[in-house]
Amino acid sequence: MGVSVSALKWQGWLVGLVTLAGLLVFAPLGLYVWASGGEPPEAPPRAPVEDVRVTGCRIDPASRRVVAAVEATGRAEGPGAYVITVEFRDGAEPDPGRRASQALVKVPGVAPGATEYGEAVGPVWPVATVPWCGVAGAEFTPTQTQTQPQPQTQTG
Image (cartoon, rainbow, N blue to C red; front, side, top):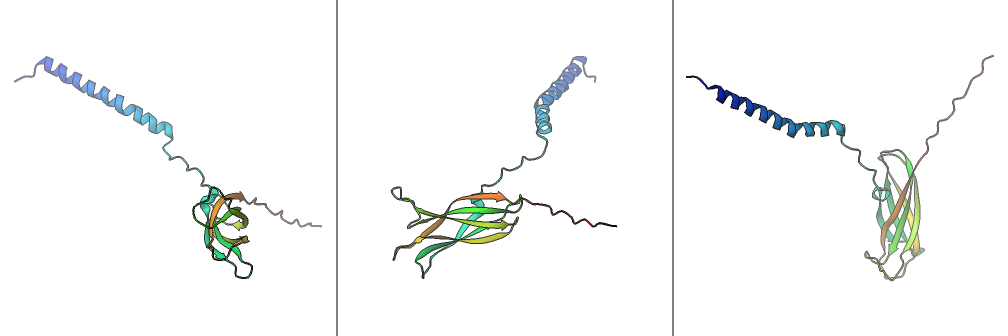
């Protein structure tokens, strides 16, 4: 019982073609993984407006002004200050025919991961109207860390 020579030739060709097909499929994949560096790309930084929110909206009984309580959560990049634009309206949906009142509040010295608070004081609010307060925009400015010069001692 012998295997003919032509059958062995066909098996050799089959092994060669399967190997070639494997290289054609997996070599580009391997090159792609190698060229990409293997590390996931760094996520783009968040917009500052995602770090702030309005936590309360009330009317001050003495002045009848609307007051919004805001909070800002620090970024991983380092400490900094937020300037938050708060909008005051008489409904959650903006009225295209009216311009909403706005106020700015600065929340300085927000450390990474920490939460700091501030208040924005708006206009005098009409009686029997419930105010709506929301964040219209925010800007983050990193704090410049300055190193203190070391005092020098003189010997002599």
